[in-house]
Length: 93
Image (tube, rainbow, N blue to C red; front, side, top):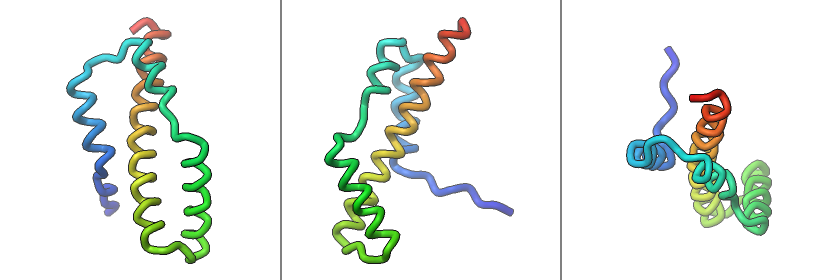
């Protein structure tokens, strides 16, 4: 029997925000889709991922990488909700 993946901080925060905000307006949905990591941070995360894959990442880098990944997951959840809101508007919901 498969087990459910563990809940993350991003999952919890997404639930809190979803309950508080109700349906997203197109303006808010588009603003959420504009939220992205700065390019310097993206480059740093890619370098840390390479080090992690090679087994050469230092403990402080690993901690930072985990934080970036959790924030990235949260952004992914918000982006998905925003895309769904915009798609629903196009279908006339």
